[in-house]
Length: 407
Ligand code: PLP
Image 1 (cartoon, helix red, strand yellow):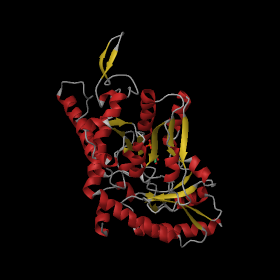
Image 2: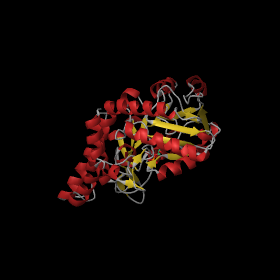
Image 3: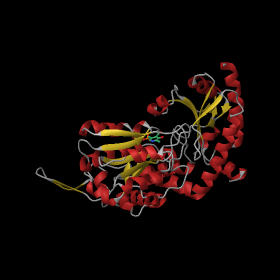
Image 4: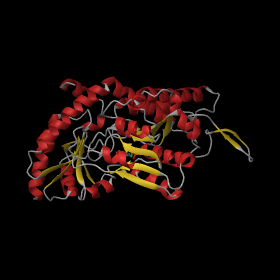
C-alpha cells in the first residue's frame, strides 16, 4: 500500500486526529483493541435509528429487517473465514466467551476424569483459565506445549504430549505478546492423526493474516470483533457442524429453544442453540461492516504492509542501546514486545503516554508466559494498517528520550 492510500485510510479513522497532551496521537496499542472506521460507527447509528427491533420474533417490518441484517452478518463472517456453512458461525460476546462456550459444552459432551487438554505456554489467560476450570470440574489434566528462546512452539514436545487421554488442543494462531505466528496447520494435522480436536484462538490473527478455517481444518476458530475494527461486545465462534451438533447448549433462555414445557425443553437447531437471549444484532451488523472494510483494503495487502512496518520498527528499535526484543520467531505478526536495560516497562509506557504515544505495558494477560521468560512484563507496540513509518520514527525519537531520562 502506498503513502496516499494510507493517508486516505487514516481519514476513515477520526480518532487518529485526536491530540493527547497537545501531541498528535500515535496509537500503537492495536493488539488490545483497534480503532473504528467511520463506516462502522455509522452502521451502529444507522441500525439504531432505522432498523432497531428485536430479531427472530416479530412479524413486523422492522423486526424482519433487523433479522435479515443479523443473518446477513452471519453470512459475511462465514465468507470471511471461508466456513463451509453459515450455521457454523455462532455470535458470542468475544473470544473469551467463545472459548468458555467450547470449554463448557465440549467438556460436557466429550470429557471425563483422566482426560487431558493441551494448551501452549504462550496463551492469553482466556485460553488457559476456561480449560483449567474444565479440568477442575471433571478431574482432568492440562498439558502445556513449551517454546524455544525465540518464542516458537516446540512441535516435537507437542507431539510427545498427545496420548490416548488427549481430548482437545487449544492454541493461539498469533501470540499477543511475542507476535509469533504459530504453525497451526501443522498443529491441527498432528492432532487429527490421533483424533484429537483443535481450537484456534484467532484474536490476534484475523486482523492481520488471511484465515481459511476449512483449509486449516480447524474444529473451532474464535475471534473478537473489537480487534478487527469492529464494535466491542461481540465475537465469533466458528465450529464444525458435526461437533456443534453433538454439544449441549452453553446457556439456556429465549432463542435457543424449539419447545418449552415444565416437563421438557427441546433445543433449537444451529446456530441458535448457542445464542440464548436477544443477540447483539447491532453489533453483528457493525462487525460485518468492519469485515467488508478490511476486505476492501485486502487482507493480503494489510499483511504485506504491516510486515513492512514491523520489520522497520524492529530495525529502528535495535538502534537503542540495551534493547531486548522479546519474541524473535521467524514468522511474526504486527506485535513487538521489548525491554530496555533494567528499566521497568511501566515507566517507559507512562512517559511515552505523556508524549502522545499509546503502547501497552505489563503481562498482557499472559502471566504464565511472562513468568516463563523470567521477566516482569514488557512494553508492547502493536500495529495496524493505519500506522505509518513516520509514526515509528517519532516513537523511536521519543523512546530514546525516555530511555535517557530513566537510565
Ligand atoms: N486471545 C488473545 C490471543 C488475545 O490477544 C485476547 C485479547 O487480548 C483474547 C484472547 C481475549 O479477547 P477478548 O478480551 O476480546 O475476549
